[in-house]
Image (cartoon, rainbow, N blue to C red; front, top):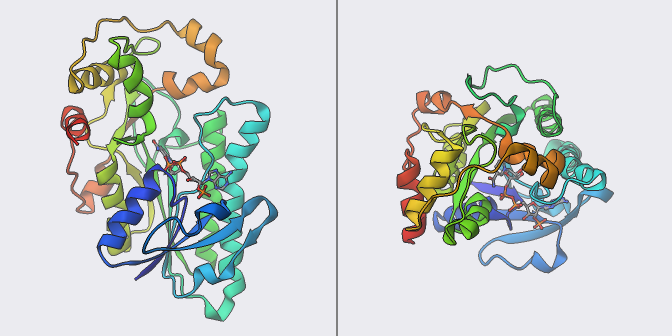
Length: 304
Ligand SMILES: NC(=O)c1ccc[n+]([C@@H]2O[C@H](COP(=O)([O-])OP(=O)(O)OC[C@H]3O[C@@H](n4cnc5c(N)ncnc54)[C@H](OP(=O)(O)O)[C@@H]3O)[C@@H](O)[C@H]2O)c1
């Protein structure tokens, strides 16, 4: 097996690359930074420039599966220019991969695309649990981005390539992400939920996420799968579990919604939206989670 991974230098990509290399899998990766081409020992890096639709076609040599993780971070201020970057970095990268595979024509060896997607595709709801059958429509910026991203991925089917999309929840990792952001105020005893704190937080431990990517490949699963643990929690529970995991008190009441809206603008949806997301579909396919509870996941992260 040989993989081509985009976004391999990011939070999820780094873990995925290390796991696959340790299993003796061949890894090619695409990076937008020339300086990173030789940055991963044991893997072969290639340069691409998605906004100019430039790609080193050698990246596809002998590859059977593409894992597509590339995308500009959503944790930077959503100015109108940056919103464009968030969307284009997902849409244009997918289009460029598609064009690359198309141009290989008879030399193509790629049989599966497994792309990151996000639970931000679902409408925010404080009560209803959503699953892969839930209707989606572009009501918010994030919904619009993810719908378009998945639409571009689906085009690989016309080339005879299996398409799998993992709608990822909040990734818990010792190396940053949501835990890194929330850990700092919590360390000072200032951890607080946002809004009423009742919003659903559908999270996944990074080890389980990496295992799920590999499971979808091994089992040749096609379609959409929610990549979230079986036990989402309210944001208040999430913050108190985090405080407990790092042995800090959790005494602060939730921060009022108007203040967050004022400070964060449209981006406040990242902390105020509620997503109770089901993982039943992947469980029914036989996948097992190593970290099923928030306390177990956070204890593992902070014991490292
Ligand atoms: N982490 C989460 O909680 C979470 C939740 C839901 C969905 N996801 C999705 O899962 C994927 C991986 O997440 P992550 O947390 O690992 O992301 P990350 O740490 O931000 O890394 C993403 C990678 O994408 C590449 N990239 C950045 N800006 C780009 C641009 N403008 N054009 C093309 N490539 C660009 C970078 O690789 P190079 O610099 O090497 O090019 C970067 O290392 C992302 O698409 C993200 O939206 C993540």
